[in-house]
Length: 371
Image (tube, rainbow, N blue to C red; front, top):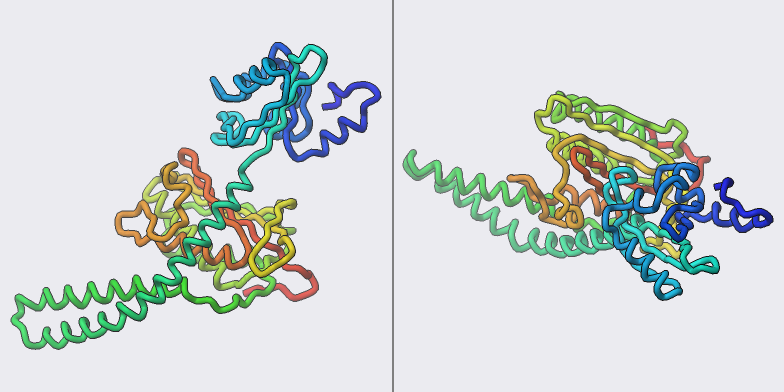
């Protein structure tokens, strides 16, 4: 952005470059006149490249942003618009932003645009929704355990006794009663996990040990024919979590990825870890905002997730599997939420990413759980 820095105004441009949000100056002919560092990252182009193009070259055809700029020029005053998708194949399939547009200069034709991405805000909003859905299952699980499991035990016992006194042709029916009773009990057992309100026993955990264990289980079982790749950041600090519950989370995510790939010959699952500073979230029971700098991803090139399922993917009983219960991802969301973390799914074509953001251990002086 140094090419467009006005003489004698170094501090102003340094301030703009320090902003985390993209800022773009659009001239009267809709050509880009200047852009800060965040805008270069957002549009994935250097300022010198941006200045050779019109804004419409970097946004979707017929984008509302173009009509928004015309409103600013007609009114001669600032206009704001919320939740505008400016995503393109160049900068990502979906980039939802809030836009603040204001005229600058004497001719009122030049406009400065401030773009604020909605991604993290929406992630947190959806995460709170996932937690609320998990709490609703908590009450349902407690009720089912009491009202259903006890009668089912009697039904199963009666069917077992009846089996000894019926003809061979009828024993298939008594076995069907027993099998269906067992199936319902297993479903209720899975739901009872949601009603466990005991405090989580947390400690510093090496996430790479967790992921290696998950990978080992997957390779010896459900993902034996699928390539599993790791992209680890070896300098990552320990995560403040429960080791066994993290294994459960990522085993579930990797199993889902393997099922999405199926028998595709080029199927691949990528496990990655990274440090992403700057993400902070208020969580229940903590007056201070918790930093979530640790990012763990499970990426696959399977069939993807239908767009209409994305907002409800972590809700209980939501599934695209023919024989699925829809509790696996709901449980994952509950565990991540109980740890004060955030989980999000992004799916585009044959690329699906489950991204988990978690807090780091507050002190590096304690030994790291390594098992």
